[in-house]
Length: 125
Image (cartoon, rainbow, N blue to C red; front, side, top):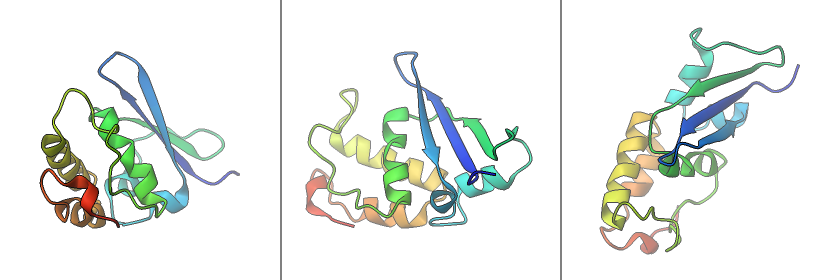
């Protein structure tokens, strides 16, 4: 059997689907968190190779940071070209904090809260 994996699919703002794959190690990083609880829960259908899939209705652009964080990579500073066109840097940072709270990623909340407003390039993990 393969390493248990959670596939997160999310319709983006342009009606495309994005899929993010989280490995067992990523699932249990910064645990307990939404991803680990979702994977352990019985509400998801499991395939024969131990994978599960969940559909999330959160901003797919913001969700892209989670796998990097859960792999132990620094996520700050965010590159200048990373920010979605449809929100300011300050709003994006507030939304990242909201998503980190939603997903139960307390360590990521701390990282984002430490970034000065308008100065997201000032912090490393």
